[in-house]
Length: 122
Image (cartoon, rainbow, N blue to C red):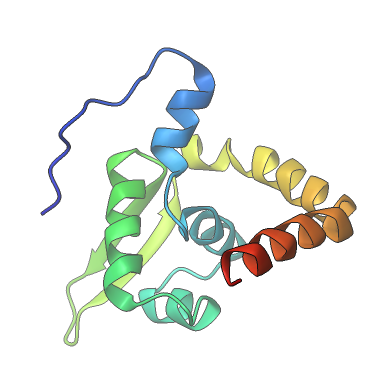
């Protein structure tokens, strides 16, 4: 397991948010769980580019940060469902505003991202 060599800076709200939400798929996971996609297989179908292992790691981190809860049903085969905690639900309006900003600035964002990617590939 990865072990940190340097402790994170937790002196301001942006540092704290970054620590909790850092990870390629975490924001999408929170959004899809909020929409009702609760089983790991459903989440995997919604994010096909992510490996099952990475999704499980990030779901475990979201659970450790008290944003989601994991319920394991005692059946064979095991059934697992994730849901947002009240703390996690409080983050959804913030993610919604960020998503709207991304939609409103889609052309500009796509342009600067593609410009950077093209420069890296030259």
